[in-house]
Amino acid sequence: MTELHTLAEQLAAEHDLPDEALHALIAGRNAEIQRHLVQRAEALRQKIYGNRIYIRGLIEFTNHCKNDCYYCGIRRSNGKAQRYRLTRADILACCEEGYRLGFRTFVLQGGEDPYFTDERLTDIVRAIRAGFPDCAITLSVGERSVQSYRALFQAGADRYLLRHETATKAHYDRLHPPAMDFERRMDCLRQLRRIGYQTGCGFMVGSPGQTDEHLVRELRFLKDFQPHMVGIGPFLPHADTPFRDQPGGTAELTLYLLSLIRLLLPEVLLPATTALGTAAGDGRERGIRAGANVVMPNLSPLSVRQKYMLYDKKICTGEESAQCVACLAKRMASVGCEIAVSRGDSLIRTQHNDFY
Ligand code: SAM
Ligand code: FES
Image (cartoon, rainbow, N blue to C red; front, side, top):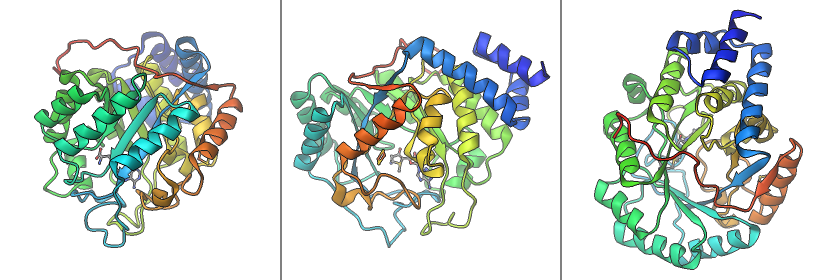
């Protein structure tokens, strides 16, 4: 056994490693150690979740955004983006269709759009809660005040996804304009957990300036914070952003990190993301094999799909929701898995640690 194999075995047995060992695994990665990690991660996912893959219906309900992240295609300064907002009725129609297709979680995602005041958004959440009492409601609408997070929770939202994007402040400042603040984002994550949301964080793989040291810090942050969900996907450039000429992150490194994350956080809900499926045609299937256990098909109306363009060449923008579900079911079957009709709540009991 090589030293890296020994470290992989230790990680699989203990679900943690010192930072230097994580660094060795990341910096020394090769196809053989990747195969080894995939085996261990897939076996662990299988042991905990069996072959059931949870689906989340993604409703991209607004692409208006007041922020200006350097990487994002719907950033405020992108004058070429065709802006749209779904109405309350549109959103409920998406849920209706999603429910028929077997979804029991709806993810409302959007840019930071001031139109969606607490009053408007809580009204929408309450309507979904009343109409679909057996479904989970996940929000992914960026940074808001604690009062707002609380009001949305009380209105019936169960989960919140807020990628921290990077656990290193200097790197955060490289990816965002000065008006955006690393500490504030981390604070939002802590608040969300304290309120009682099942909380998801995450980062882009291969974002400009990201080093192996940064990746070790990502993994350490995840291990310390113990999120219920972790969303990672490759950074992919968008032609109308300041990062248009930056190289994209790779599917290979993303898959490698998915395995490491499964082994570090055995019970975590881990999606094989659309960005991963964009970086490689079989990215989502390979993501599942690497340890992921969630997929998030698009439930947005066909008419707006092309407009929620975070990065170039995004997949699944030309298909009806039903087609997306059928396609994903086939893809999951190709790796021995099946889609579960279930809320798919986190198995992680909310625990108290230093982050509270
Ligand atoms: N506005 C909300 C927020 O900030 O959390 C949710 C929407 S935001 C567009 C969702 C995620 O898309 C971001 O957290 C980011 O990680 C990802 N994203 C944005 N631009 C991307 C790009 N060019 N490549 C890959 N992922 C990207
Ligand atoms: Fe959308 Fe395959 S998941 S077309």
